[in-house]
Image (cartoon, rainbow over all chains, first blue to last red; front, side, top):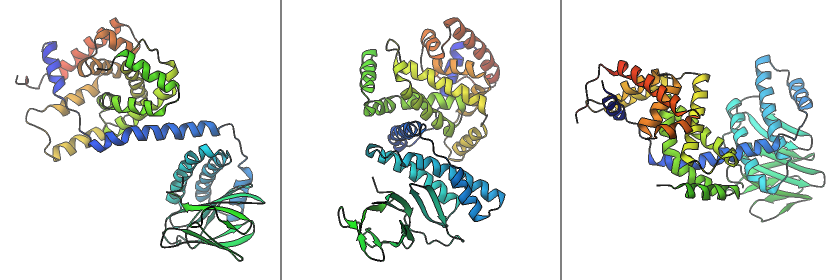
Length: 211
Length: 180
């Protein structure tokens, strides 16, 4: 067989075709990855001790080793998210939120229908799990609550109760997609622009729409 | 045809931190890089991952791009390196067979279509020989351009091509000569 004949033969081999939508989507995927990695690199110098978090979570729950390992992995993820979270640069919010979404997805995969809330505050990151996988399926909500005692952020669901600096509040999602925060002394709705709930400043919305 | 000046202007834009310009570059070169990665790996899924890594790597090292070279040659070099590293990490050729069996099920193979055999023969080459064949035969690079993309001398490219052709002829000798 001559070289030319071989060349002709090789050129017969076709490439599997991809749908046109793939080529439209691909550049955006690359840019998203680049932004995510850039955010990861920026967060590296920020170090937070995860030991107290592990001690609290593992000690309090008395878990089986395999479950404990899984939870430890989750905590590492949460610690990473918290590292990003505390960056507190408004220009990075969108990127941070993307990372939170990603980790929420991983948490949800580990504990389907069991997550009540993921809480980020000055003490670190905490995960509130139901004893059984019976948390009703609903869109995850993101809340950022600022007050005199600092800022708390939550990923939670409609129907769950959260404690905002010691005060219990119920989170509800109405039919229009607005988030309601019903406390003992006040009610706040995301339909009220720049509203306040008592002494707190609240931002809330679906996790996958908030920017 | 993209000129070196066009490439240079695009890099200048990137250096001014214009991510949109880079997205345009990805859009323009994505098919070339996907094709190279596919022929190097024989796997659509791996080709996607490697193409993505190629562009991410390129973005992170754009400052190191020498504008006298063509951007496509530089991207080829990154992609080939990604593929060679992938080869070291693991072999996932089972996906190849899955892909081809899907093609066969879809009745997508024309009579006399030796795509599967040819791709399998390519995968039996040493990865560096395979890269030389892909860049010259499929991407149309001359030996000098391929040498630049592979970061080796033209003599090395020639030698790899010689060795690759010898092996391919042996592997593909059972196939009929394609009709003109």
